[in-house]
Image (tube, rainbow, N blue to C red):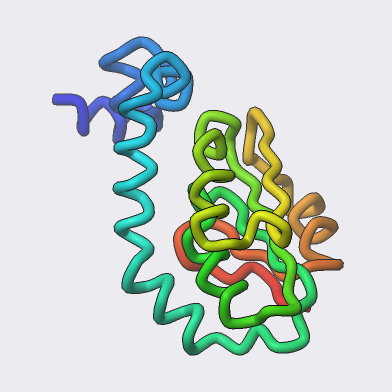
Length: 146
């Protein structure tokens, strides 16, 4: 039972079963990465649209979308706020498809796509990162707004 292993060991079942981390696997299987990214976008459709519509980002000059896939929610927010710029930050395997997705929204000149091997940020790094820009970290958590 893989769930039991994950609960007891505190490690992902995928890694236990396949002997490789999920995003390492996606590096070797780009078609499956695209399916995964599409699934993650689909989870954001209703909640992302609601957030973009109801959360007041006025006064925010730059919005960072951290660890949230290929920029779907960021694109929705930037469409509503034409003077805002965006930073999309995720793992290299995840952001590979982001430029074409962002271009489909006509936002390629307003979103800076960045990647790193790890998205783990210490509380001090999160504070520093979020002190000058508004950040969205994780599934729907607004970490800070300045």
